[in-house]
Amino acid sequence: MTASHDTFSDKMADAAIRATPEPLAARVRGLSDRAIAWLFIAPTIVLLLAINIFPLFWAIYLSFTNFRANRPNAVVQNVGLGNYSRILNDPDIWASMQTTAHFVFWTIVLQTLIGFTLAYLIDRKFRGHAFWTTLILIPMMLSPAVVGNFWRFLYEPQIGLFAYAVSFVSGIPTSDIQMLGNVHLAPWAIIIVDTWMWTPYVMLICLAGLRSIPDYIYEAAEVDRASPWRQFWSITVPMALPFIMLAVLFRGIENFKMFDMVNLLTGGGPGSTTEVASIALKRDAFEAWATGRSSAFAIVLFVAVFGLANIYVKALNKVKQR
Amino acid sequence: MTDHTLIPGKSRRPFFLRRGPMEMLAVALIALGFLMLFQPFALVLYTYSFITLLAGTLMFTIVSKFPE
Image (tube, rainbow over all chains, first blue to last red):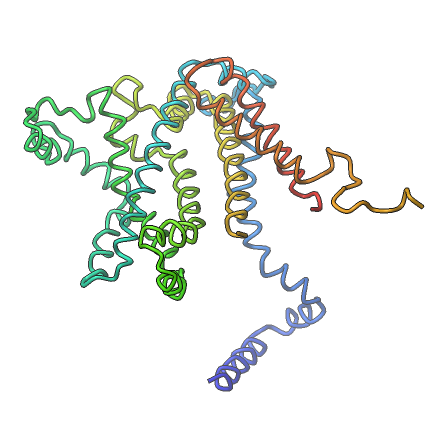
């Protein structure tokens, strides 16, 4: 197998050599291995610089100016730390930060608890577990735009299935179940949808963690007459912990940036009860057209997520080293 | 002669160049800044959250390059 593979590789290399024009081949022959390696990765680096690094530095620059995207010909003035000062003294933006924190905290708690429980059950390898795994994974594969739209129909007080189900169980009239119109229920409506959509993702990562635990550890624990409860807390949880932490990191970062679902379901309302940071940022950038100020807001969010990710990666490495 | 003898467990680097404690300090600053940014109690804490976060993040980025 290896010999035939080598022969195939050699043939391919020969074909590539023959296909290379002589002037180019002569030039490449003069390059070191390191230079050729750089030549291969250069397009990726250029692309990365163009679509990731440049916009970041451009946003940092804009955050110190009064630039407005709807007035591209106006004179751009340096305002120093003025934009940061306004962002960090604005009670409305402060409120949007609290809304974001509420949303991120509860989605992570619910997704981790339900995701790990589902993974633990699926890992039992009962009859038809592959079918159930596929079924559970479906929400994760859908587009957020589709999910947002059909949950809006589900939440409809008059015709929605959600309102009907809650009414059937609780006896409350369907017209009173205003999930998206009630200031107390709207944040929870978004949390429910996000949990429904992304719990399978957490489950998948936890399942990978549970499947990586070797069976002999459980066998040794059984020989030592450890109870299932003890096995769960002393083997399953500690060994799956790096995977759970990874899932929390991914979901945490994603949920800090959550925009599409909130925009489709409530658009930040009623009032500003579901106005998470990304919605407030969009309003500042594309409704108030304060591009400089919204860039400062984006940098504040970036530093928060970057700082948290640093701590988290450090904690993850510590757990993995144990 | 005594001056050149290394005492086991004791680093000769000054505190601000030691990776362990400085990393802990940076992590504490980031955590504090993060809590200040998202707390619902005082606007003044929110105002100073970004500078705390930024100081912690920059410090972490620098000190994590120090040798162990």
